[in-house]
Amino acid sequence: MDLVTLFSALADRTRLRLLNLLRSGELCVCYFVEILEETQPKISRHLAYLRRAGVVTARRDGKWIHYSLARPEDPHAAAVLDATLHAIENERQMKHDRLALSRVCCGPKLPAALEHAPRPVLNTSS
Image 1 (cartoon, rainbow, N blue to C red):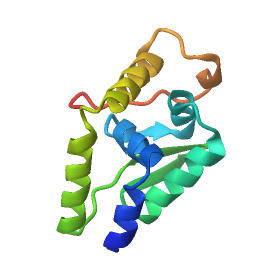
Image 2 (cartoon, rainbow, N blue to C red):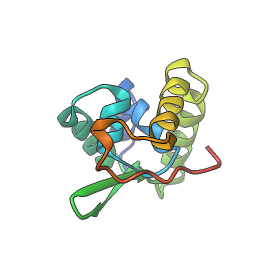
Image 3 (tube, rainbow, N blue to C red):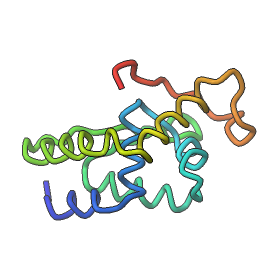
Image 4 (cartoon, one colour):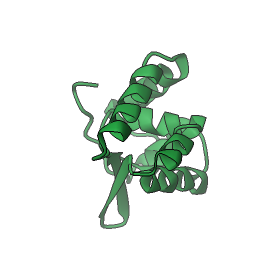
């Protein structure tokens, strides 16, 4: 594990927001686009950066790619990730993003942009 890459990955607000949302469970890009109000290419670039840093994994299901948090094997890197997630947990923007995700995915009707997207399965412990 390259700690410089990890710290660089954690030094961006958009990437922190993505990690914050991934605490809730596995998500596809379309949910990030909806909640963060950013373009799909920008979100995908940030997710690729997080994957290179070893803190996000991806799995393909048909045309959908689902992203989830990955726990680094290196105990120091895992401690850095844990501390980061803990530090941002109660930040206003992060709470707002998690609430928006809950409203979007758990509401009775998905927004038009997400009508054909797979619904995420959120962790109940988040």
